[in-house]
Image (cartoon, rainbow, N blue to C red):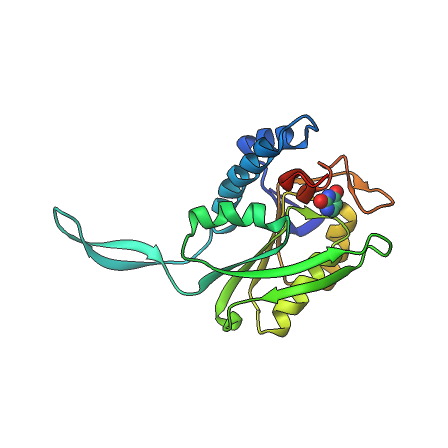
Length: 214
Ligand code: URA
């Protein structure tokens, strides 16, 4: 679903995603449940974010006959995970596209300034020829997503999509202003950010809820 006021944002409002997201938001949901649901939602979102990949016909032989059958054409995929919560989405994406290359971008938010601090970056070499799908469950201030994408662009990336679970209006605005060429896919747009940069109502700290670190 696209909103005319946010043409670069697609809200994937499939009932299964919305139902699973509601369970994830619930503070009573266990760590194991949270992780499993994130992976399941990643399957469903991966399906949407790759919906327009180009196909080509390739010749194959079934047990019965020769035929031309569709296969994904052209650019190879890279999934770029913003550590550490991005890995929860990454796992589900890799279930569906096991041959994708993977980039890891280590960023943490300075709790005072809310600015991203990079501590790790490892990506495939030839980013210019690939479709890059950057994954991070939470688009909050947009600062980490922007920093990750700028780094990928410095390394030649020019065809990028951003996939998250929840987005704040402030983050969408900030991100869209600095990365107008990068479409955003999200399962929901929440109300606002609080003074600590958390999404309200949100689901809390995605990394902590995935890994039980709080
Ligand atoms: N990161 C999170 O994990 N949760 C938020 O609400 C905002 C950023």
